[in-house]
Image 1 (cartoon, one colour):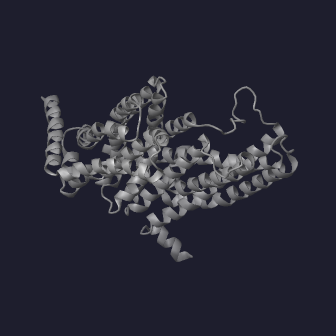
Image 2: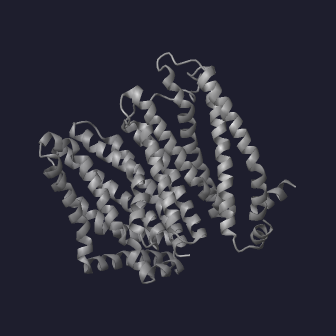
Image 3: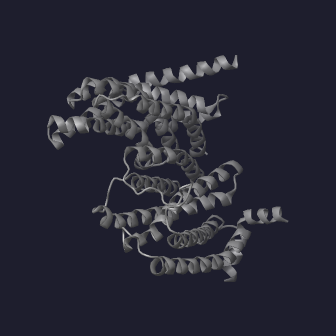
Amino acid sequence: MNRHSLTRAFSLLIRRDLILAMRHRAEMVNPLLFFILVTSLFPLGIGANPNLLQAVGPGVIWVAALLAALLSLDGVFRSDFEDGTLEQYLLSSHPVSLLVLAKVLAHWLITGLPLLLISPLLGVFLGLPPAGIRILFITLLLGTPVLSLIGAVGVALTVGLRKGGMILSLLVLPLYIPLLIFASSAVDTAAAGLSVTAHLSLIAALLVLALSLSPFATAAALRISLS
Amino acid sequence: MFNNFFHKLASPKHFYRIAGALIPWLAGACLLLALAGLYYGLIVAPPDYQQGDSYRIIYIHVPAAWMSLFIYMVMAAAGAIGLVWRMKLAEVIAISSAPIGASFTFVALVTGSIWGKPMWGTWWVWDARLTSELILLFLYLGVIALHGAIDDRRTAARAVAILALVGVINIPIIHYSVEWWNTLHQGPTVTKFDKPSIHISMLIPLLLMALSFKLYYACVVLMRARCEVLERERSAGWVRELVETK
């Protein structure tokens, strides 16, 4: 019975967040537009030389993805914090870490997934070869959940603060660096026609690590922020 | 008796007194070791056969880099103790360590860059270990910023502890990812398992300096912790007595 109600709470939480996102589509679209816009600024800024674009492309797309994730993260717990729902999560009989995981999963479905789907188009914009685009897609598939998971810890720590947004970037961006390194070098390596199994395994390992640890850290951080 | 000592140490009042008594000794020992280390390092130790005299900056650079990591570990450990056992003093130590660690990281970066100018020909190279230090500096700054942003001291200390723990898990990942990404740095010369490739006449001043830096940290962290304790306990009776008797 208890287990049943936990899965129910989990799926209800995801459904609620998805419905809320569908009602505020602008919030969902903004990070996506930001992602596309930032990426298309680079050819304008550094010149449209195909070789140059191909060289910087993976890094540019990944940096844009990090920034877009950061932009969208601020909203994960904000509205729940303001209307008191967050306190109800903490008071509920379910483990907070699992409820947090549901929130993060919903956040990824709302912001990470669109990013992922649009990324091949941006790969074409920057002239990446097909092999590179395929690996770009896989790295984003494995990597964007990590962005949401690690970011959630930072958001949970800053949710009650007035200038949380600025501090959030200082807290979270350094933690994104390993992912950025592995992911963009995976795309580079794939574009050069070499095997990227090692890179992808490392990114998958980061995902497993973040998936298993960050919900607990996020839950602890939420308890502190609301104390 | 030993147990009793620790209980006493955990109470802010006794900590304040014991730390106050320790500080002059630590400061004196730190100064003596630093003078000895600098004398042996700058005057007695022979110049390097390749790098000439410019290698001597390692007597500042290497201990500072060691300290930057060491202090982060201390901060995370103290933060964890504070989170688990709700020990106020551990929270105080954790948060007092952050600015010191950040300054050591900064010193390591600046001296590394000064050493890099004659060796590599530029002030900054995206070398793996320099980059790791830079990221470590960002992690420290994040901790300091978070602490500054939260008004309530206890909440701030606990939030910082969580952040430090997340950071501590990430430090090895960051280190190896960056190492893998790019490396130009000269390999470790002291910690090689078989035989250190550094000559004993250069190693001794290095270890003296490292010890002196450790003592410096102990001394400054106690000073900062004393201030923090006073501010936290400003409404307690013993602090008022302290102010009135002065």
